Length: 51
Image 1 (cartoon, rainbow, N blue to C red):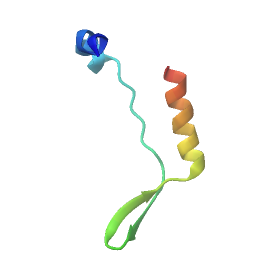
Image 2: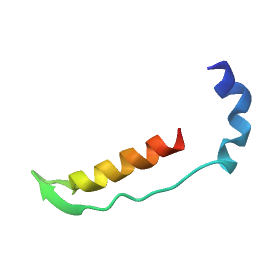
Image 3: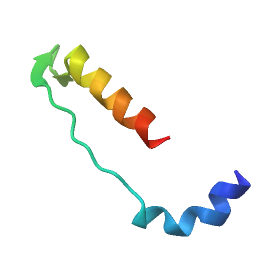
């Protein structure tokens, strides 16, 4: 937590953005993004590669 507090200023300069791909659908009046398992795995790999 201390490290996060001390180094927070630089966070805005060190971010990565990614938009997950999926299909939108409405279930019970609520809109959901249905993301395929392959896309979820891709995001997991991307996050793991960052650390």
